[in-house]
Length: 272
Image: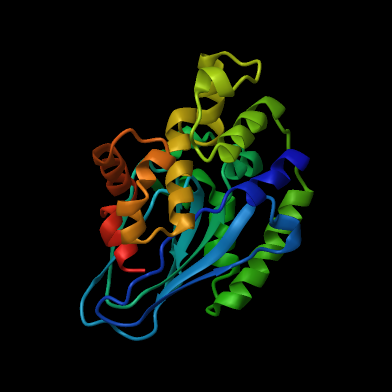
């Protein structure tokens, strides 16, 4: 388990703050219980505090994680969203309340034994993939409407579940993952990921645990480290950030950033 404990310390999957578009929308993240912090980054809540004047478009940036989420107003609507190579937009109504569980990279597969590549760039109804977990969220917790109470009950359920299973840690995979985090996504597969696995084997293992290749996952890690640094629009121009994060020119940096975020860097950081 020591390999798993390093993920949280090395990687912070950031989702930018929800903007006040058309009315009051709040987004919260809550830490899981200590027993689950090696596996779950956070529980989150996205909700309106009153009815909006128009429908809401929620943008999720690429963060390398897998999320389970549900509609608190209709608990039969439960989903799991896999690794995404680019940003995703969700058109929502004028009033909504969603809650979710954000699993740290690889941990959804570690806990539930589901091949992450089945979820890449898509979200599926949880009932079709994990009917027993769907029943917990939709039936056993049906009466809960308060986020803090929901978090408490989910903590209890997942702690009990984790105690009942055995987690098999592949040190070769986690050595490669740790290298990618330490390099902030800037690495050479051939030179830096020397784990004893061939390039083909490494791709297969990464696809199973993460839903993508080492190279693509590294691009998301690099992007997330840029978000964490919160550069200003001025520093983007003056300090040539794209050189520091491994790009040879600004055009490729802007193209990749927009693909992962949905807007160009000057717009993303100009709003901070």
